[in-house]
Image 1 (cartoon, one colour):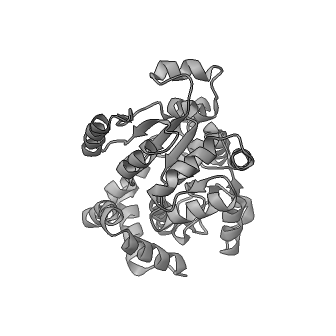
Image 2: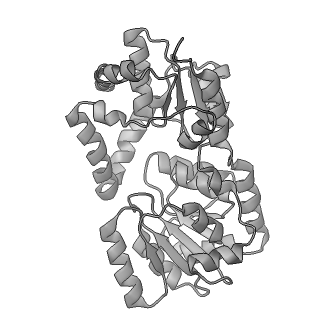
Image 3: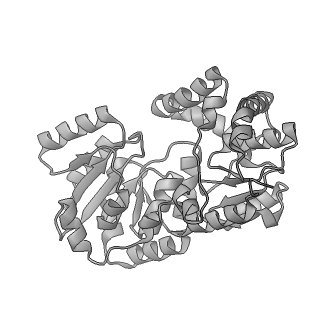
Length: 353
């Protein structure tokens, strides 16, 4: 988003709203979430489901938003921003509280970064929303948001995901992978969450095993463990940590095997790489997987053992593979960041005003 705003002459400064929250709350949210999804994901699912059914904001959530809004006030008054863009439900709630507490006319746009919307996103004093699907738009209208405020713009990704290479073979050679033959890209998000080791082993045992590239993000321990395993098994899997050119790897791949996060799947849709989803975590991943598979834009592995057959289907030339590609192209929004930047520019109040 910051790059697309810069093209329009708008400087974007990025701030983590949790830094301005109560330190205990911030630690519980960040560490608690990661701990839960790694050890007891079912508990996170129960919490998510109950919060999703809540009709009103809980007292603690309201207190946290108002506390953070007060802490943010000096920064906002110093910066005098023309608009605020929120890419997570928590800062959206904080800015709703800010506008209410201080009677601030500051325009706020919320970007819903999943294929479903949680009620924690929905505030009637937020000026605009960018969402991924018509279904989200309808759900927000049903909860009282003015339809004129909601744009089905997609989930913003780097525009380079939508720029397909002229010579895919040359790109693969540049990345150090064979020009010919199937290549499966396996990803687990920035923290390397998900059954990546089991995935790697399942694909290595496939009858027509594809070349594997496994990107684990910033999880150094997992990177070292999987590299050691790849060398020991001799399957030829290439294990990488954090990379800045994920778009190149997606363009080079014949299939992406990944968690059903909103951002990574949107990148894949823009890059036109077929999607096979790993078993989702309860909560938004589960709902993202449900949405994408129901519309025929992805295949879902219930267990790692399903992967060889699903990957073979996704990279094949049969009718199911063609339907997968057609549905994915329908859902893709490679220009989402540009569309949303244009809306921010229209929404922004000049600093001198």
